[in-house]
Image (tube, rainbow, N blue to C red):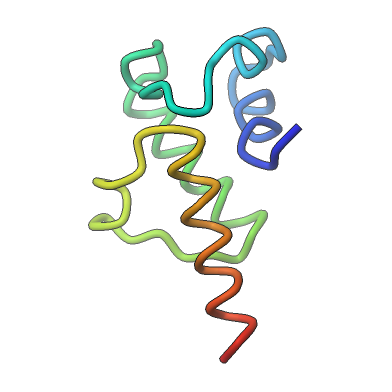
Length: 80
């Protein structure tokens, strides 16, 4: 299970939701409210050490978006 899926399980309290949602499904359209999306961003920042700005949040809609973003930022930070 990906880090983002693990965080969704933690956030929602249920593995079924994280298992059922596809990588490219819009999280907001799948039932995650805006408050939970903000909490997801905070969890991602805490667990990965990757900073997510308000501008970045506008581009993060799916699990795949979050995973690519974290991977790209992690690689960039490691290469600096």
